[in-house]
Length: 208
Image 1 (cartoon, rainbow, N blue to C red):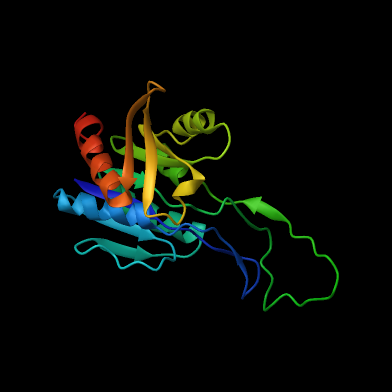
Image 2: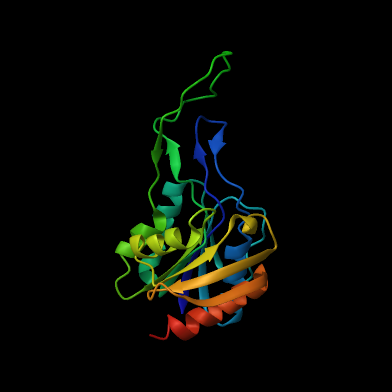
């Protein structure tokens, strides 16, 4: 198979210096890319800014903003069999990016934010015969929100994990499929979890 994987955070600039982002390390996505390659698959990895070397043997595409990530994925997806979306994209961007650097004035400032494009949901609308696996990092009403994302993003399955996964070398995940049931759970080093997830995708999603 040829698998598209997104990883890491995105950045949304407020001005030419400052940006909104998050603490995603990209470890889970990079581990999945490595495991997929080890399993004999081709991988196109679209990565936000992280401090990780790309897995040997994968195609790597570096992006920064959410729009850049979507544009790159939209280009690559038609030639792939499926996508695994682990990237922690920014949900909001400033409505109008300020040129230069916003100066301090001693007063409070108000920033108007608008939602960014939902990369995985957009790919889900274009999936056709391809499969889509999403990741949901939730802190409240975790299962409800994961199932909501499963359908809103047109995923074949969604992997639920918690905020403790951010920056950690370990992870605990639940795989929820179209039945809305947890069909698998994996825990341990992210490399081990990634290997198990790739095996599950091969057996239950890609083989259909």
